[in-house]
Image 1 (tube, one colour):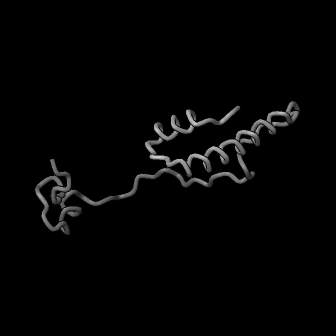
Image 2 (tube, rainbow, N blue to C red):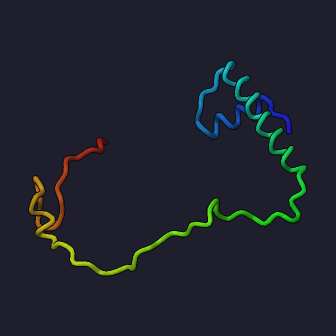
Image 3 (cartoon, helix red, strand yellow):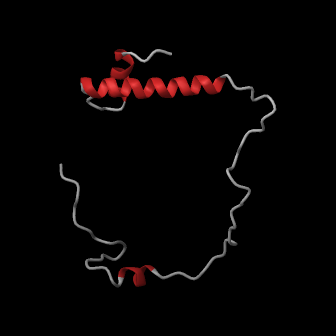
Length: 96
């Protein structure tokens, strides 16, 4: 596969990047090396290779899902600087 200016412009547009001419040349070189590497890997015979699902044989050790006592709404709101009866009141952060 050939990496050309149109492909780099398209990738820049999709990634919302402003790519300069100098960066474009460097990106073209890097992408071409990556594609060449993947094409080289495609030449390998992998007929008898099992798919690798995990890098190690370790498994997750999960705890039992138990219901534990929690705190009430009143207790949760008791330390809030500006609570209401049902929720935390916080300063507005989104400006229109």
